[in-house]
Length: 315
Figure: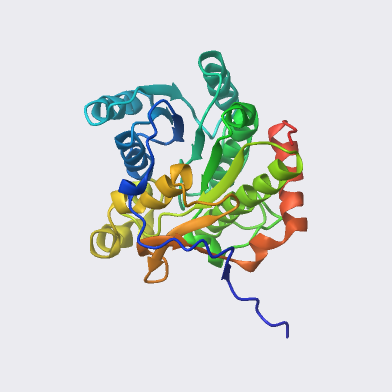
């Protein structure tokens, strides 16, 4: 029987007890956050905005984004803008990217935060399994269409994964769950794909001699509306009880994102998250990565498949 390869951290960055007050002055820098109207995305916008950053909330609902933008403007000194983006519809992704390119010449950080979790079996507008299509493929195309603006700023791409990826796998023979669908397995796969993409992106940026970098993070177990928006049945019931009792605040959950997006201590190709109670909460530092994520052949395969599915070749 093959010995199980243990999970491990990618590097020893020496980060401990990191807090948002260690962010540098971000005045004049632009941070674009998918799903920034609530939860981790909104709290990350507050952390970054408190350091002077300008924020773009890229969200499916313009009304919710505008309400969030209004709240942000009352809290931070930087500019706050909104762009309509539905990651489950590649037409919307292309339209939103075009709108960004028409208005901005560079992006200091693209934060791939939005996602869905444990949804019933359903498809995106393009026929993809909803969680893989939204969480991974939508962000893959979004990043590919805007990477030159990030490179122009020598900026960062930050992609959110999850501790859940540790229990997942990339099922190349059934990416869309057509042979058998499990809401949980599909979610685990999508978050594994997020992390595999983030690390492969940084490798490709280095090979291409680009100035942009890629970093990944996860929020631990944080109290957001992610657990109430997607899960149904027993999962929805359980989260109503466990969120208030076990989850950390969304503000604390957003600290890994703030570190990855703008922290001077964050390193390219790194992966950051909470350090206590199985990485569900606590001080921010280097996070553990499942062995399958480090398979570069699989990462190349995922990249090639993703390019084919979204119809966009890059790097």
